[in-house]
Length: 122
Image 1: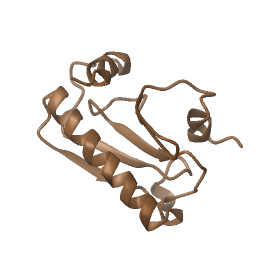
Image 2: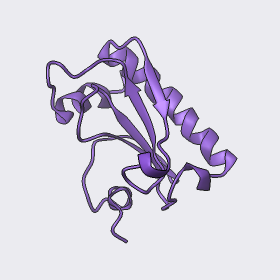
Image 3: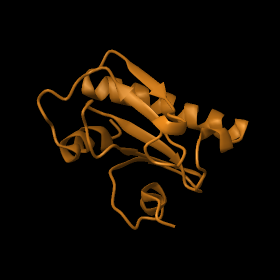
Image 4: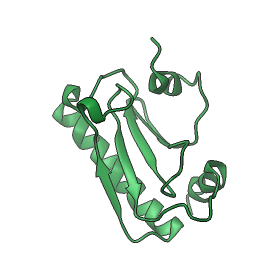
């Protein structure tokens, strides 16, 4: 399969992982237009969010809640939006939930710099 998110889930492509369990992976988007922009994906290939079970959707939003609080606290952000893209708006055909912080990356921190701030559990 030639899905970039499957390759990330299978560790064929490196990423800045903020959360991982047996079913899901959360990592920083490589293009940080919004500082802290994070993606949550199921490890199994599902084309879009409509293919997720209600339990899987709940777990994704539980992960998003935990990560959103961490992102807001550590990056001094006041708010985030959570969204799924679907159909023609979905750039990569693998279900993924975006955590989109309200703060533009005006100082142009690299994804590695942002990861260094967020990876610490303190």
